[in-house]
Amino acid sequence: MKRAQRKTSCWIWPYSVNKDGYGHLQKNKKLTNAHKLIFEFINGELPKGIVLDHLCRNPMCVNPTHLEAVTHAENCRRGNNTKISSDDVNEIKKLAIKLNHREIAEIFGISRQHVSMIIRGKRCA
Image (cartoon, rainbow, N blue to C red; front, top):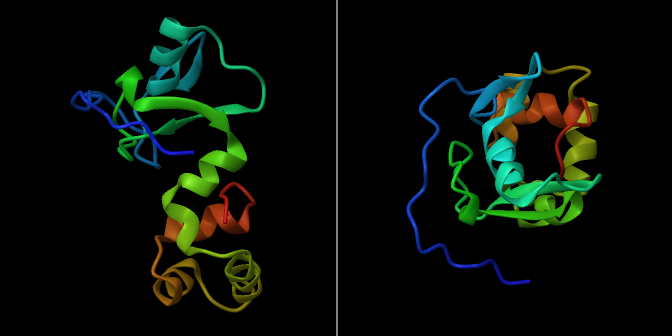
């Protein structure tokens, strides 16, 4: 599927961001991603198993026209993580036994946070 071209500017979240660079705020005493809250305010609640893809590739953007509801697998396929293969993920997990996250990140050309999330199973390959 071809990504839609954005015709408007990013709306950069001006407040706090989480460790992954996404704007966030508190809703019902729970931290929530700002882009998700704004998208759902306009379009209604996302179905279970559906996530938002930033078509602009800017995690601080909250412009709802830059967001598309997709499956997690589709979001991974489209994302910047595609330079890490399934074999790389397996190798990263093996290396984690003897190397620290910084060393692994340097080997694969990714961030320490990305390494951490791969090891914890929170990041797609």
